[in-house]
Image 1 (tube, rainbow, N blue to C red):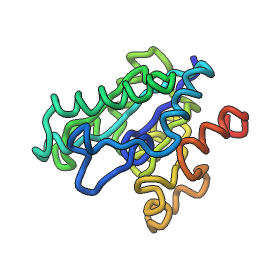
Image 2: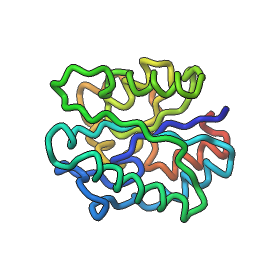
Image 3: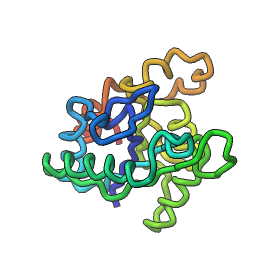
Length: 183
């Protein structure tokens, strides 16, 4: 099975320090929907794994999150693509859960659901916690400069990311994958 794991905010859609709280605030990054469509047509299963602490913080509820995700799913479908699954952590940073990245709970749940090992699976994110959680489960982290990506590159704590491939955006990563420059 060919599998790609994507973070949502900052990879597929524009991120906001004020959180994406409604479908109206969800705006795709140029080229991201087409990139997901290209992955789908190339036989990849596309899974989104995303921290959504705005729920715990009271900024939006699960119904609103579902509406945001429906908008994303439909936007991808309009471009001929498909998102096979969405896993999210609704907890806040101090809730002590195992699912909030950089912990690995969502990745472990994904592996269990699909009955696969994540060794070498490409996991694309824009923050250090995305990359750390991917690495902890044996997935192959890739950083995009969109969202918090440029900030992540500048972060002194991100020094352990020296071997992580960095791309301008999701479209550039997908182009490299499809040209077998990133396998």
